[in-house]
Image (cartoon, rainbow, N blue to C red; front, side, top):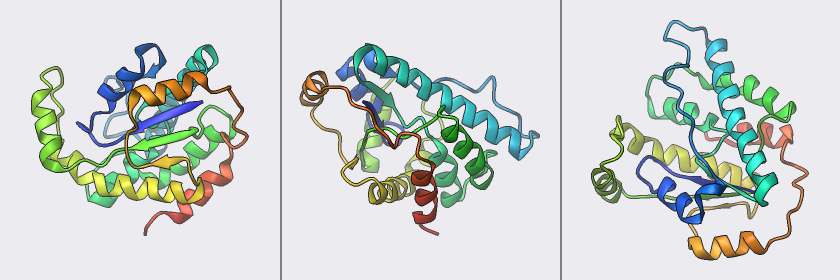
Length: 208
């Protein structure tokens, strides 16, 4: 089982994931020194991020194979970021329309897929700012930008929830209870993990 813990910066994703157990965690992978420059083509950006995110999903499947489940600190299928950036009016070189075919191909190739559960946390601006200022280990640049992305992030996962009923919850469950459930659950296959029709339906259902 692959579990996604999602929310904007300072929502508490990393702290929550670590409470489940570090050995189960799929962290974000730094990419600043590798990603294409501003002069890179739309296709270069799309392929880079599709491959980068697919690497995280492969890591999740390796952890799942070892322990029975994996906890992803933000969704490996992170194409929602470019969509949210555009919806919020920010410039981002990875354009959503260009990203769609690259992500779809990665799903077809079974390199990138859908998780079994998504826990998405809403957080008010005041609490997020307090948590940001209390975390001295991370600078969290462009924090106001991340706050502006939250309504669009929620819209994305609402659309996914419509397509995958009972797979998306808009809160983080008690970590001890979740760990107990995951440890006692018999591993089972997800036949729709690499179903491109889910991706197509999600794109169709997104607000315009």
